[in-house]
Amino acid sequence: MTQFYTFLQPFGAETKADKKTVFKNKGFIVPLVMIIISLLLLLVFYFLDFIINDAKISFNYKLSVQTYYLAEAGINDAMWKILNDPAWYSEFTTNPAWQATLGRTGVFAANDGYNVSIQNTDLARAEITATAYINQGSQASQRVIKSKVYKSLSEPATFQQGISVYTNDEIYLRESLTTVRNSSIYSHNNIRVHSFSTLNVDEDVMASSTIDKSITSTINADSLSSGNYPPPPEAIEMPQIDFDSEDPGSYYNRADQIYTPQEFSDLCDQQECQLNGITYITGDIDFGKSTQLTINGVLVLDGDFKIGDNGTPSWLPGSALTVNKTPGQPAGILSKQSINLGIWLEEASINGLIYAAETFYVHNLFFEITVNSGIIANKLDINSLWQEANIILDQEVINDTLGIAAYSPLFNVEHWEEEY
Image (cartoon, rainbow, N blue to C red; front, side, top):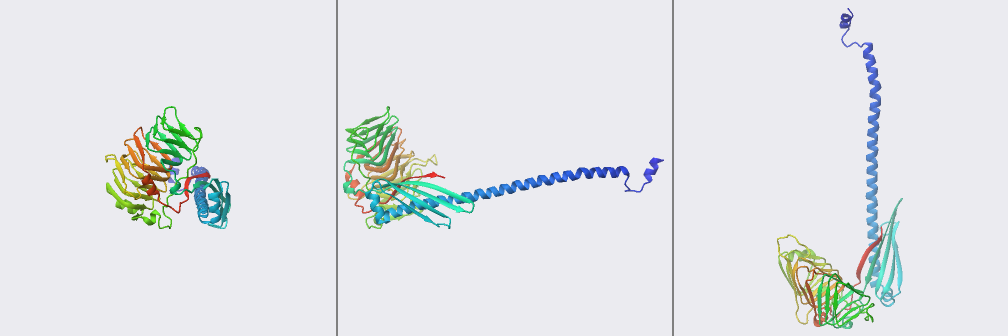
C-alpha cells in the first residue's frame, strides 16, 4: 500500500530524502567552486608576475645596451679629441706620463652621461677608460669599457732597415718551422717560441721585453737581444701607413678602385679573382673556399682580411693566394684590423708587404707560405703543424709600400669591458 502511495505521488514532487540530498550537494559545490576560483587566481597572479618580470628584464636589457653604447661613445670621443685637439695631441705624443679626463651629460636624456679618463703608458700609447651611466626612475645602469690605443710616430725613413718581421706587441710561434732570410726580426714586446717549434733567423732576434723559448723548441740566429738576453735592443716604433686621410697621398685617394664589402663580394663571387693596381675595400672580406685570389699590386682594407678560414663545402678544393709586385709600386695586403690565412689555404706566395694593425694569423696546417718582402703587425701568430713559413727581406718593396705618410691613424689595439 505504501509503495502504491508512493507511486501515486505527483511526478517531480520532492521527498524529504531528495531535499536532504540537495542540501548535501550544495555543501559540497560551494567549497569546490571556491577552490577552483582560488586556483584560477593563483594562475592569474603567476602569469601576471611572469609578465611583469619579463617586462623588467627587457627594460633592463635595453638600458644596459644603451649604457654600453654610451660608453663606446666615450671611447670614440676621447680618440677624436686626441687626434683633433692640438693640446691633447701634443701631450699624447710628447709626455709619457700624460693623463686627462672628459665627460658629457644629457646624451640620450637628462639623467645619463659618461666620464672618460686617458692615461699614457708611453709616448703615443694610452689606456682609455670610459664609465657610462643611465638613471631612469628607480632603475640605474653602469658600464665600464677600457681600450688601449697607440699612434705610430715614426716616418718610413726612420724605420730600421734590415728587419723583415716587426711586431708592436708579440711574435708567437707554435708547432712552427719558420725561416727568416737575410734579415732580423723585432718585437716591441715578447717573442715566444713554443711547442716543438724551430725559428731560423739569418741575423738577429730582438725583443724589447723577453724572448721565451720552450724546452722543446729551438732558435738559431746570429744573436739574441732582449730583457732576458741583455742588452735589450733600442725601441723601434711601428711604421705608419696613411690609409684614408684627406691627404692626396693616402691609399684611399690613390686607389684605382674602391669597393664596399658587398660590391667586392659581387665582383669576386667566382673561383678566380684577379686585382690590379691599388684596390681599397671599406670593410671586411672573407673569401670562400676554393677562391684563387691574385693581387697584382696592393689590397687595402678598413676591416679584416680572411682567406682559407671557411672549410665548407667540403668537396671543394682549398684556396690559393698570390701577390705579385711591380718595381717601384706598392705591393701586398694592408689591413686596419687583422689578416687571417686559414687552414683551408693550399698555396700562399706573397711578393709584397703584409701589414696588419691588429694581428697577422697564419694557420698553415697543409701548405707552405712564402713572404718575399716583410711582415709588419701588432701581433704575429703562427701555428703551422711544422709546415714551412719562409720570410725573405725585400727592402725595396717595404719602402715602396710604406711610402711617405704624413698622417697615421689612431689604432685601437685592445678593447674589453671591465665591468657590467
